[in-house]
Image (cartoon, rainbow, N blue to C red; front, top):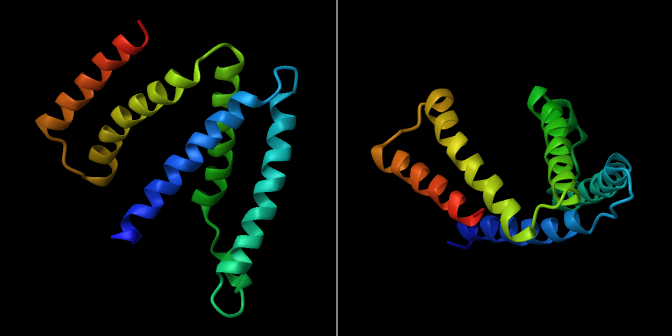
Amino acid sequence: MFSYLWPILLIVTANTVYQICAKGIPQAMNTYASMTVTYAVASIFSFVMFLVTSKGQPSFKDFTLTNWATIILGIVITCLEVGFICAYKVGWKVNTLALVASTLLAAVLIFVGFFLYKEQLSVSKIAGIVICLIGLYFINK
């Protein structure tokens, strides 16, 4: 059970701290300068965790397994971060931005799951999307 729960706890905790940090980036700081520092720290942290979590000897062959998804993910994560930072800089509130973005993302991913991965699309999922979109209306009112 713990192996099922710890990832979602990590996501929620990290996302909470992430939103606080993204809002805390100085208004005057160039967003890409901020991202350069952020990703330098992330690279060092990731490499240390790679060494720590490698069973026995770290296998640097892991890096040869890099494919298009790993490279595109780096670009997409940067765009995601820049989007949040810029949204905060133009005045989005912490108590609405992540909720609006996550709700819209969930709605899009239902269709991505259906079309790309042949996941089930049910009436209840479509009803859930409609309810979420109605909720967005009330949250932003």
